[in-house]
Picture 1 (cartoon, rainbow, N blue to C red):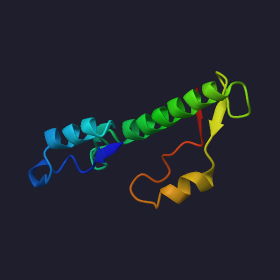
Picture 2 (picture 1 turned 180 degrees about the vertical axis):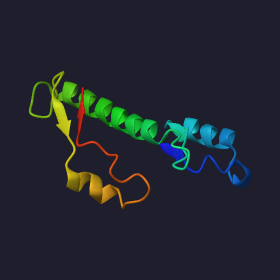
Picture 3 (picture 1 turned 90 degrees about the horizontal axis):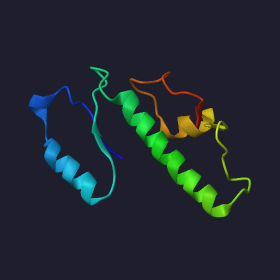
Amino acid sequence: MLVGNKADLRHLRAVPTGKSSGFAERENTFFMETSALEALNVENSVKEVLTQIYRVVSRKALDIGDGPASVSRGQAINIGKDDVSSVKKGGCCSGQAKGSIKR
């Protein structure tokens, strides 16, 4: 996923939205602009990433069958605190991450 942050600073934009979305489309990925200052799309971008991860994991689980990797409907997928903290180095949105995703 390509995320353009600081969307609130339109007058200082270095890359036009069309160019960013075009690049994301060519690379077969998602694009979203966010602004932590205005709380614009920050939560949506995290939800989108997690949704796409879930879809990939679910597809792989279906390919494997009913093995230990498969996730049934209603089952929680826990994201450990260590998993999140290794990616997240702090910043404006600390404390907003949830501990699990439910299908």
